[in-house]
Length: 238
Image (cartoon, rainbow, N blue to C red; front, side, top):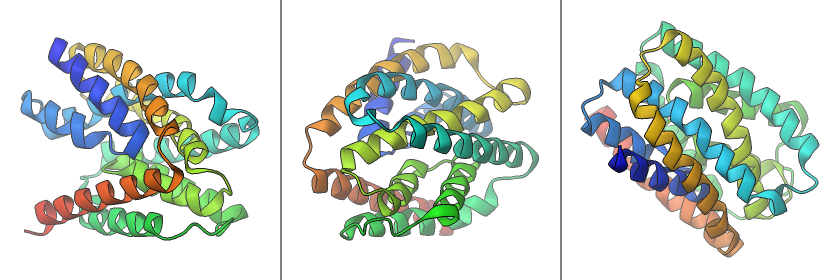
């Protein structure tokens, strides 16, 4: 339980700083002997608690953004529910095949200089919805893709965009977690220590992100995303 709690802390930090929660927690759950589906749903349920710590630590960045956050939470909740339903009803092979391309593309977008409001209106909300489906269904580096979509749409500092991303992720993960809790093979004995650590890690992460220069946060997330894309491609295509 202590090791799982420490894994949770590390996951919360990595999730809220470079948007890559599952590169820590999901492999750890597999190493503990959980089958892939049980590890996936258990990880998603636990990740909901990262947003609790992140929201508490990101109050300066979230100031004045309540209408935007609430609107996007509704969109991501719908997308997360759609993704969770697809996961429970279908094998994840489709997203496994496309995931490396999605993650690599989002990472390359982050490396470019942001263009103010490149995504607007329905296109922006549709993009957020699509990423939330991906996150609820497969999830690998979904935070990187969401960060890229938000960066292309919001004329804000990377730290403020990152704070919005962290909070709306809690919505999509929370709805997916509810479905998994009712119908999925969740390991609750694993969720308790893992989620406790994620609350702490989710609180620490924004404190680190706040101190990073804006471009550094985007570049760090992009580089980490490209590394994960290469790893996903190797695992999927070889």
